[in-house]
Image 1 (tube, helix red, strand yellow):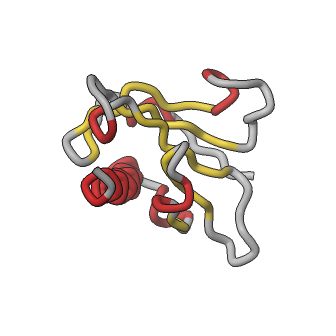
Image 2 (cartoon, helix red, strand yellow; image 1 turned 120 degrees about the horizontal axis):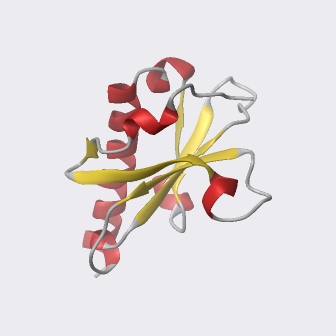
Image 3 (cartoon, one colour; image 1 turned 60 degrees about the horizontal axis):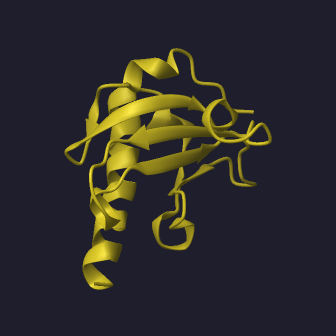
Amino acid sequence: MLKIKNINRIIGLYANGKKIIHAGDYSDTIRPTGKEYFVFKIEGDGEDYNKEHEIVLSKIPEVNGTYRMFNMGLQLVTEINVSIDEIRIASELCQCIRNILVKTQTFYQENK
């Protein structure tokens, strides 16, 4: 199972111009059964792309050793697979979050 030391250090960093306001176990904020995921809450103040988002990172690796990462509620259009090397450093983890936010933004622009 994936473990990230000092995950809270990502709080306050930006991804695609949006501030990360929470980082931790999914069960800390949502439901007690979500222990197999991390969640990163992204600030928001509106609707669609401008609302608050939850980026989810699976702690359990896929068969190929990658981890699933997606925007909750838009999993089918935002899911990516990331390697341990892509999430080991905070700036690279922010880049993965940014990639998902770009997919989210594209989805809302194309589906107005």
